[in-house]
Length: 268
Image (cartoon, rainbow, N blue to C red):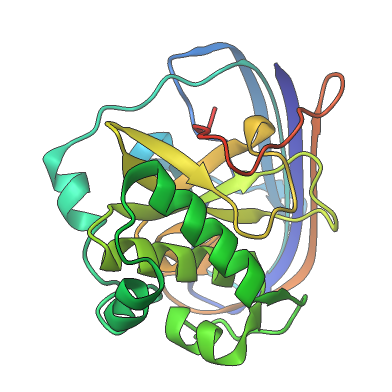
């Protein structure tokens, strides 16, 4: 499978702003080919970038702006082949079963045990996916950046990150390691960066998309972590910025794969 992705960002910073950006597709030894380009320009000059390795093949690109700046980012990548699973560590299995900022599994434990009593493994994954999909409405712009799984369940609506956070929290409540993955998602409409859940069952990580908005087989990982606090595509680590433009594309060479929500699928 060949996937082509791109992102264009434009933002304005104040003085002394430091930015961490996560928009580059993750690198993986299983890909047959991996070609990418990244350009960051401010005031007509290329901005120096520092690439920082993150978990699960993800990468941050770090940059600093001493003066107020108008910044334009252009990223593109073409990837062929399928990813091989990354090595699973005991630390990951511990980290991803704990409650986190946006996936408050401790608070949702009674809900998880009431709704999914007696379920485990792949059967539990399918049940959680179907339940979240049925309980929430996808409404663009309906949630705040501070909303976690509990607030999402109370409001019964959200965007992809909210669907993923609720699924992650419910799975962790049942002692299933689960994490959030930021992806490029061919077939997604409207096109944007996309967030899905990954859960560890039967010795492997499997992707769950409770929104059902794009086929999982063609998704391309950007990064993964405990929740969206680990996977934001743009964040400041000093100073502040205003995002003025975001445009994302993601396509496959040929037809999109058929999606079977009940199938176990690994991010590739």
